[in-house]
Length: 130
Image (cartoon, rainbow, N blue to C red):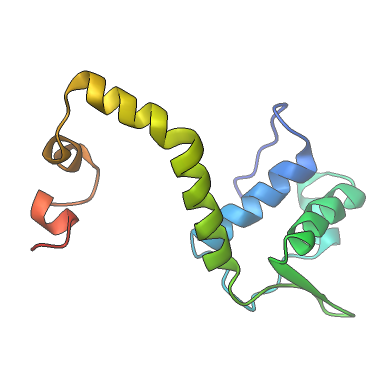
């Protein structure tokens, strides 16, 4: 969470929750890993400990983390898969229609998209045919 900066678009507890989710999706935090303590996060980012606790509580409510009395909070088994499923569904529902419409409007082919994608190599490699 070193590069965390707050913005005014949503509450800090939500931004904190979203940052932890991103770390799980990116593999920075794995199943069984502990979350940084509420006190440490509050001190490091100069936010109220109750704000951190609220963000962590959202993660617990979503069953992504579990509280272990006296030990802290830990990433639950299956958290990454749960998040991936939800994020994929949300992407396909909320973002893909507009992206697809733009692709159609511009007459782009799958090859155009694969060739333009960063770090994918050749088109055949990108689709698993190489």
